Every structure is written in structure tokens, then in C-alpha cells.
Image 1 (cartoon, chains in turn yellow, green, orange, purple):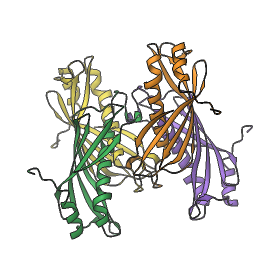
Image 2 (spheres, chains in turn blue, green, purple, cyan):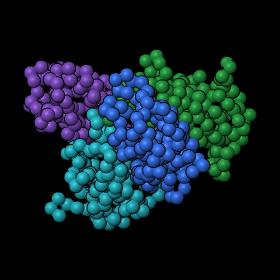
Image 3 (tube, chains in turn orange, green, purple, yellow):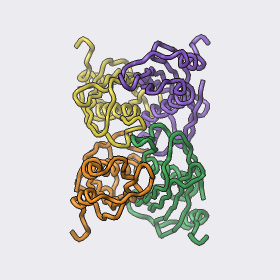
Image 4 (cartoon, one colour):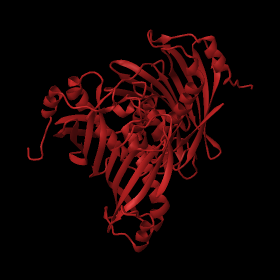
Length: 133
Length: 133
Length: 133
Length: 133
């Protein structure tokens, strides 16, 4: 599992006095981009990139400013050209949000899904955590 | 179904050159808050408010700056103290995103879910669109 | 003077209950980018682009959600390779903010300021409003 | 001088590939809010709060994702009911932005500027750095 740290900002708050729910998407993206740039993008041929197809967030607790959060990201499913990812947003020792997302490898020229190379699959498998694991 | 209009901003773009996916959450919230403040909140007793428990977004197409988007919101399920909502984000005549979310009515004092009053249920039923409808 | 319209978003609010001051920067940018893409960028040779060197905002009134704002942008000074711009953010018939900014034309290869062509100057002069005008 | 640390986010980038200029405002606010909540707000009578009247940012260098930034904030002028603040945004050992702002103490009831108490002045003086210092 890969972890990134983020710092909450006053601009993340909303009129409810807590961190706005859209910030959870931003934190998920921090974790996701870190995983791709560190682990998977180095295995991609030129002109290939990942896009997000679906993001589902379960809001478990409010986040408050000021504060720091850690977002953990791992891979739950490796398909032919798509990945399932899961994430946990943790603040003050408790899970504030859980997320699942689907990302698809796209070929820049055709703008269509492209199957993973062997090298990408191997890199993804290193981050694969199955529910039974 | 209730519609709100939003204007995309240059600050919504990201290094991929398109509108960042977190903006989809922001647009969904615009639609949701409009539905609550216009239709449901006037039926709530003091000290009651809706929170979001889950948000799932399917990204169907990229959004680009500059541009305008319309977000349509409707109710798909009325529970005891929670609502299912669905949303469509439309730009240039095509659906860029679809979302489903679960919102729960909370009692400010107890911080727990609170059952809907008859009046809130009636207001919610006016915005209920079932899949077969 | 060029005007753009923006729609305020719930995510723009902060814990003070009003629109966060950083949103004023975002609105100024909407106006600025519109002016550049519509009026000046078509006159630029390839590899040239404008960057912002300074932004000063005077906050005149709070902005509140929900609402719409109009941002007017005009040119106050045309230098050798830099422009002075002024902006007004208007909501509900009153000025919520006034801004001044300095933008510089940059050559992508050298990353240095580059003097305006005659064509760019002519285009800029069409948007020049001097204080006495 | 007070320092806060922030983490840049992928959502802070824009179509130019760097951190959007509006993020500089957000970082300045992080530093400002920290100074107020830690140092000055504890000296305020109930119903008093600071608002920002003017913010001027000089953009010295681009910021890039991923990265961390430190924002230093100090007081440059103590008026009757307003403060002058200065800020520096530092990343990778260089100053990416400098800012000056004016903040005014407001009385919630009258919505007008309110003079500082002796206690607030003393607290502000501890953070006062004059140019000659």
C-alpha cells in the first residue's frame, strides 16, 4: 500500500464549518497520481496514460481544519486494460473516507482502452491487495 | 428533475489540459445543494440537516475550458432517514458524468440519523424518478 | 472592457459562511484568460505566452452563495513586453472586488520577457482604458 | 515570523502544466489563518474577527507538482484597527511568491472596523518585523 500525506487548507472548508466533500476527491487524486507516477507510468510505452472512469467515496467522518491527512492507495483488481483501486483517507488515527475507483489505460492516438503490457501487469501486481490477503 | 448551470473556470483545468475530475464532485454538489435548499430544507425542523454519506461518479467524457455545464438532480429512493439521489452532468449536449449519492438527515444535537417527517417525505416524492418512470 | 460571467459554487464557501477570498483570484483569472484567448493570443507568434507577474485584489464586499458574478477586464498600460490590467468583480449590482495585475509576454524557448509585436500592441490598444477616459 | 507547511496537489495544477496562480492565494491564506488563530484571535473579545481588505501577490517563480511549500508570515504595520502583513512562499529553497496584505478587525454587530485592544497590540508587536529589522 502506498501512502501520501496532505495538509488541509482553510480554503478547503465550506459554510458547514468542516472540510468540503469535494476535497475528499482531491485527496484521493493525490494518492492515485502518486501511485501512477511512481509505480506504473514508468512501465508505459509513450503515448499511453491512465484516466479515471469511476470514483466512489464513502464518507465515514468529517475532516476539520487545521489538520493533516494520509491517503493510502492499493490495487484490488487487474483487468485487461483497467485497474480497480481502493483508498483510505486517514486523519487523527481514524478513517475519514474510503474510496474505490476504476482507471483505464488509454492510447493517446486512438483515445481507446489499451491492454496492459507484461511489464505494467507485473508492476501492478506488486500493489495488489486482495480482500482475503 | 432539477437543473443548475455552472460555468467552468480556468482554475478547474489540470496538467492534463482538461477539467480536473474533482470538479465533477463540485458540480454534483452544486446540484445537490440546490435541491436541498430549494425543496427539502424548508420542510426540516430546526437543528436538522443533510449530510452526504456516499458519492459515486461515472466519468463519461472529458470536460474542457471554456464551457458551461448543466447538472440535473433527482431522487431515486426515499428511505427512513436517507435519500438516494442521481445526477447527470451535461455539456455540449452530451453526458460528461453520471453520479449517484446517498444523503442522510442528521440531528445536530445527537449527530445521528433522524427519520423524515411526513412533510419532508412529501417534498421528496415530488422529485422521485424511478428507473421505470 | 470585456465581461465574463461566473456562477458561485457551494465549494467556494468557507467556514466563515461566505465565498472564500481565494475565489476572487479564480474569478480574476477567468476574466484575464478570456481577454488573452479572445483578443491577444491570436496575435502571438508560436511559442509565446502571457504569464502573470503580480496580482493585487481589493476586497470591497463579501460574496455569498448562491449567486452569479460578472468580471470586467480592461487594459490600463501597454509596456514593451508587459501589460497592466484592471478588473472589477460585480455581484448584485455592486463591486465586490477590484484587481490590478501585471502580465508579461514570455518566449517559451528562452523563458524570458519578449517585446510585443506591432499586431499585439494594436490588439491591446483596443482594450486600453486610461483613468481619464 | 511564523511558518506553515503545505503540500501541493495534482488538482492545483492547470492546463499550463504548473500550479495555478490561485493556489498562491490559498497558500497565503494558510499562513494568515495560522497567524490569526495561534497568535491574535485568543486576544480578541467575543464577536470580533479579522477580514482581509487587500492582497497583493508577486509571482517570482513557478510552482510544480509534486512538491511541498513553506509560507512565512509576519506583521509589517500595526494600525488602529488594521494590520499590514507580509508573506513569502518558499519551495525548493527559493522564493516562489511574495505577498502583502491588509487585514481589518471587524465588530460582528456593527460590521465596522474596531480598534485593537492593548492585548491585541502587544500580541501583534511580537510578530512585527520592520524593513530595517
